[in-house]
Length: 152
Image (cartoon, rainbow, N blue to C red; front, side, top):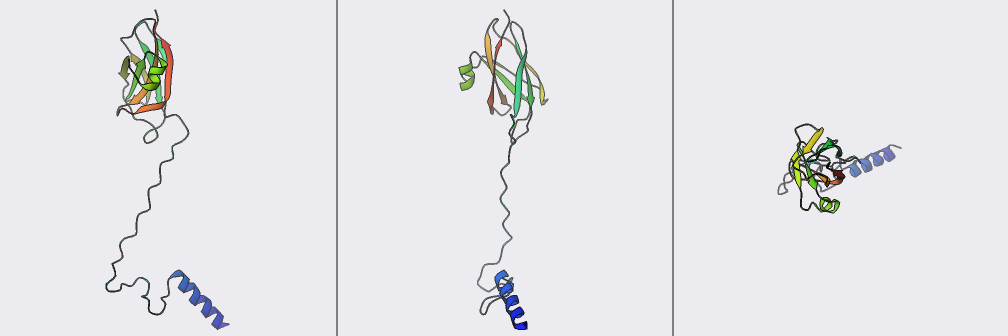
């Protein structure tokens, strides 16, 4: 019986690397001519899992003959969202807004994560579409808002 327990203990120690076999160095020992053990490698940083939510939302809240006011709300912070200020850029058509081609006018928000941005200097009785970008020029890929029509 003792022989069986001793054999099981020896097998367990050999499998876990605690016991050294004949002719092999003991675990944790350094053999001359072998490289010194270094610190253990740091585990890789896991990627950030962003929640399934739009990082910013917006809607037109007011228009005049020469301005459009867009209310925005930044829901997520980097790396999944944006930091203020936010830029609202207007385009004369949906296709231009989709391609970010030929912007008509733009305005920048304040330091708040939500609020209103008014874009002035527009043409009366004209339809506009809007897009958001952050202070670093990163365009929001989801929101293309509009149409918003200035009053006659």
